[in-house]
Length: 390
Ligand SMILES: Cc1cc2nc3c(=O)[nH]c(=O)nc-3n(C[C@H](O)[C@H](O)[C@H](O)COP(=O)(O)OP(=O)(O)OC[C@H]3O[C@@H](n4cnc5c(N)ncnc54)[C@H](O)[C@@H]3O)c2cc1C
Image (tube, rainbow, N blue to C red; front, side, top):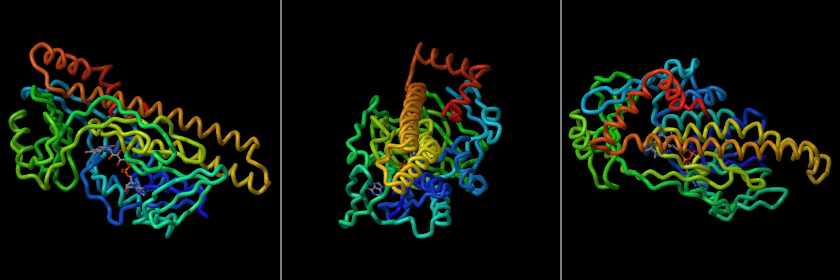
C-alpha cells in the first residue's frame, strides 16, 4: 500500500510527487491520460516556480531549453507607455522563463520516474475517492481500489477528487474571452514581452523557444471557429503588426476564475487547479500550484510520519505528533487559499487593465500605466508580476 496517492499527473501533481519522494515518502501517481497533452497552456515560469523546480533538480535543464524574458513593455497607439524590468525583482532568477507546458511536464515526468521507478501509472482514471477515517481509498474506472494514508487531488479544474470530497467550488467574476496562437517570431522584440493596451482590447505577445512567439488577443466573444488568419487580422487592426502564418490552429478560451472552499478535508488534500482556477492572463496558475506543492510537502511528511507512529504504537492517532500534523495541514489550507485569492485579484486587475477603453477612460487607464511604470510603483509591480508575494 503506498503512503500517498496523487491523482493527476499534470505539472502540479508531478512536482508534488517528486517533492514527497525526495522526503522518503512512498508515493504513487495515477494519471488518466495515456499520451501527454500538447494543448497550448502555460509558458511563463516565474522565479518562485523556478526555485520550486530547483528543489527537485530540474531548473537548470529547464532553463537550458527556455527563453528568458527580462522585461515587459506596455504600449498604446504605437507609443510605449512604460517598461517593466524583472532584473531586480528576483536576484536568483531575474527573469520569467518561457517554455511550453508540455515540455515542462516532460521534465517533471522524467524526474519522477527517476525518483520512483514504476510509480507513475498512466491511463488510469480515478472514478471515486472515499475517506474511511484511518485510510483513504481511490476507486478506478476498472473497479480496482487502492488505499493509502493520504490522497492528493491534483486532477485539474474539473477535479473528481474535489467533488467526491464534497468541497464547494466558487466562481469569481465572469469570463472575458481571448484567442491565442503561436507564430514564427520576426525577432523585432527580442526576448521582451509586449502588451498592446489598444482601444479594441489588449493584445499580448511573448517569446517562446525555437524562434516562435505566442500572440493573445481579447475578443468580443468566444470564437472557437476562428483561424490563425483571423487572429493575425485582429492583431494587425489593433497594433499594425503584420504576422506570418500561424504555426497551428488558435485556441479560443473564456477566462474562468474559481476557488475551492477548502483544500484539506480529512485525509484528502487539493493542490493546483483542483483547488483554484486562475485566469491565464498574467500566467500564474501553474506557478501557484507549484507553490502549493512546496508548502504541502513538509506538512504531508509530518502527517504521514504521525500516522506511521500511531500505527506502530497501536494508538488512535490522538498523540502530540498527530495534533501537530493536523495543525500543519490546517496552516497549508489557510495560507494557500489566501495566496489563491490574491492571485485571483491580481489576474482580475490584469484583465481590467486590458479591456477596451475609449475617450477619457482610455486616457485615465494610460495615465495609470505610466505612473505604475516608474519607481517606486514599478518595483512593486515587478514583484507582483514575478509572484514574489506568494
Ligand atoms: C491558455 C492558458 C495559458 C496559461 N498560461 C499560464 C502561464 O503562462 N503560467 C502559469 O503559471 N499558468 C498558466 N496557465 C495555467 C496552467 O495551465 C494550469 O494552472 C496548470 O495546468 C495546472 O496544473 P495542474 O497539474 O493543477 O492541473 P492540470 O494541468 O489540469 O493537470 C491535471 C491532470 O489530472 C489528470 N486527471 C484529471 N482527472 C483525472 C482522474 N479522474 N484520474 C486521474 N487523472 C486525472 C488530467 O489528465 C491532467 O493530466 C495557463 C492556462 C491556459 C488555459
